[in-house]
Length: 372
Image 1 (tube, helix red, strand yellow):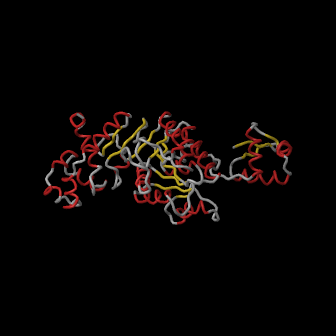
Image 2 (cartoon, rainbow, N blue to C red):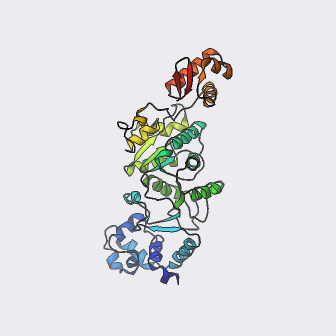
Image 3 (spheres, rainbow, N blue to C red):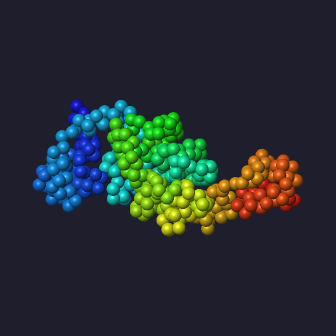
């Protein structure tokens, strides 16, 4: 019954289960015939295709496990999951430009995978407060640009990015390293539901019953890198999934940005390396990002031309105290700041000077100050 109702989809899904046939080989085959024709082709025809050969041709001819594909069709129908084959008009077109684009994607959500502006935001699972501040500020500052945010639904920076996107009204998509019959980590089940409800989605190339095995994550990372206009690395050590994703994005000729960190901070060592080796552009404020991606024109946008608050700031304890005071009032005199902060006048002067240099605080006539 299933085969009669969905013959094309059956063969498309089955192609992903054939041993020795990965995304690259599937792309080659599909240049010569469609999915159903591949399974009905003679071995002599298939083995002559450059990049296929006798071993892979034999795997295709010998494949009989169509029951597995039928099970997947029942699963996606039951849970209203959208199957996106390479030739589907809704398939992410940015991914099609990657040599190893997934043969099939499974998508639960409503957001357009071919949205005009898409960025990936990635980073370490064991983030610092600085990474959280950077991510929160970044998402707040790009909220007006209607940008779709991609990440991997992992602990740390991924989760922060998804949550901040939802908070700021931006659609956000989690790319998974397993099937859509589960959420990993399980602690992010609620977050995943919120992402779908808020207009985002969940995306994977893995069928149901696929566990989040270690070797699936690099495959997941290539989707994160490939379907975005740019990848932003918030915080990472020299090794890990974020570095793999950044390298993949470079290989796909995508823009990569990295947030600089202290040279003594091992959790920023990866970002600093990417910048130093010219594999990523140093990112310090939102306008830089939007301008380099061609999403705003600083020469014409008067608002953007104004010197803007740096978004990637790690405030000292004294600076935080003063910022909190200024947030509560339209403007505050230096005397009131001294009184309310409980700091010495020299400590207040030093903190305000630093905040002015970072464009956080603006000095007004009459020794008044306000948030910039």
